Length: 318
Image (cartoon, rainbow, N blue to C red; front, side):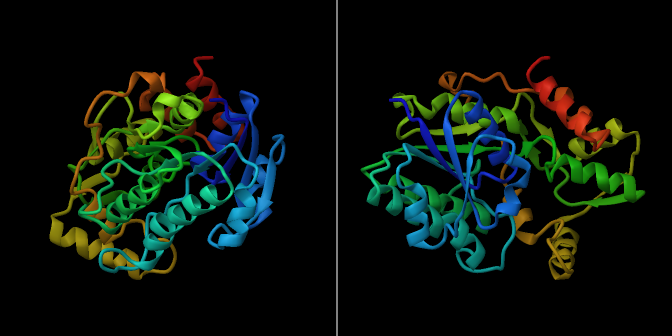
């Protein structure tokens, strides 16, 4: 079934910005919800409708999805206060919002929903992040009226990411990096490939009810990724592997500092399980994931528009 008008929740964020570009490129009519139009200023040149909406307000959310053929939810948080089974920030973004999106779609006769979760999502998972993501998936699956599809990406990289860019920044600033969970394993996927996968199944009836894991072509330890970023920028900090006890103390100190923590205790809990594919990528996704080695050097070595543009060209093989 063809879905023309797509309402994207979280469309001004990292993955959302790439997805919106991909949807526009294939001729879809796109609207995105944002609390403030300023947050979507980087998308102003695209032919999209930017709607100031508080998606946590049921009335505003219902108004936003009305008339759409499909809804894509990309909202997620990495940090939040502690709680059992998870704190209020995780509950609000990962469980309450998906539940409200389902209700809004059902109430406004929107039959197609794509929800982006996380690899390892499980109501009984080791972290608040993964437990809340798992409960969010349950909320999506609970609806018998929606043709829903769930994506579970591993860590996502690309221009403006808060992953490889962070490792490069730290090595530019500090001669030594005390590294927690150095052996944790990831299968990073390029943000453009996440967008392609979503676009490729949007109109695919066979994807209804499916949950797709997304990962790149290679698996890396966290330590290997930090070392690789050092190779790219030509600055190698000495990596000191922290035992778990010191890692938790380090994370606690980050949590107590002002601003967004570099690392939280919940992040450490998430890394107790590998963020890698449990099976090969589904063929209907029709993607050949780009490698970190192809994409990352282009944007890690510069911050100009040209370097970011070249990263997009590299991903397209041009």
